[in-house]
Length: 111
Image (tube, rainbow, N blue to C red; front, side, top):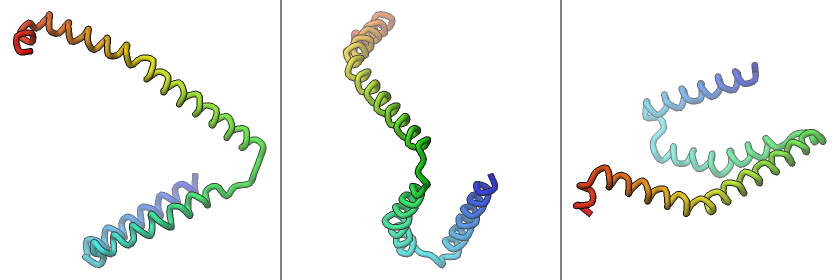
């Protein structure tokens, strides 16, 4: 918990310092774009690679395999449900539109 609080405090300090530098016009748009490019092209990929630097254990391997299995099952079920139910959705939308036209006959005159 202490690590999380420290990281949040560090981020808050960086945000306040960056805000102050921008408000004082010490950093202009060109410098901001340069810093953004450095962050996007170097710092973030290195941080992502560094986050994977952990000791190997069989328990972590089991967790990875389980999460991978769940993601495949979820993705497959979502893809199948959208393909399977799209005609049903179209039929329901048609029925709802017909009901609205019956309840509001002026829609029939307009269309």
